[in-house]
Length: 335
Image (tube, rainbow, N blue to C red; front, side, top):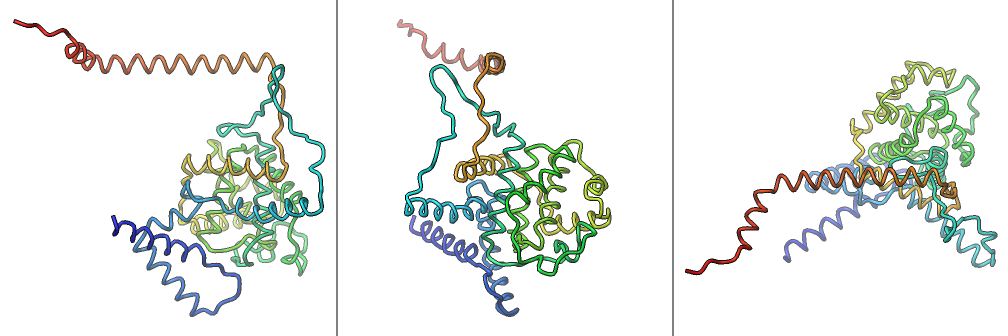
């Protein structure tokens, strides 16, 4: 038991050493190489640490966007408390005995508009609270512009606001007719890229990183994927060759790991809902109508019938075991 506890402590200390490294200031090449070599040695000794510390791979690791947003949420609450700012009129609807309010967003069928708002808000917090400005040339908008308009010299200094990010993502999703599930997978791929490639999403690269994540998510998730040439019809000034090169680099940086487990998907969905609650982005609530109540009842009845059929099939498979139980409970015969 002592050796097991000692191993766990070593794992925790190594995990903190790996995840706690922040490239906030420029470091020389030798220091960076030594740090990278040390991480590789540790991960080769404990390969499960890399998986557990990455939220896009492991369901127990907390999402990056939620942790980045907590700083602003705490400061906002503290400011409201110090300045005695009232929360204002309550806009959230609550159910009563006569009326039941429900939203049409579930983990299996999220609401498209609300999901895109939450995903773009998560991207906004990624850009606003980034650690540094590490990037790659393939994602730089100056080197690979999305439009023919000249990119200003100070393009890397101004952070985009939430509305700007939302309009960009909403335009792509509307034109390509993508689903809400694709938006969640897009965020998973985005955080996986930032973790694997050790880069930051910043004003100079956010559009191309988001575009690459959407491109990959639409091909993996949707049955009828949107081709690269279709995105060239949406973004008129981008070429197919540029899209192909960006997709290839994106996959290589992900180490071709495009798997999204159901547990990771569910974690991101519920963390996005928590992000919406913290930022007063309420999901659309509507009163439960008679027609929808009947539809829910029909679905519930169908699930109940399927459960009964499965129970009967299980009973038929265990019929011999029931006979054994019956024999075991029979009265003893005394001679």
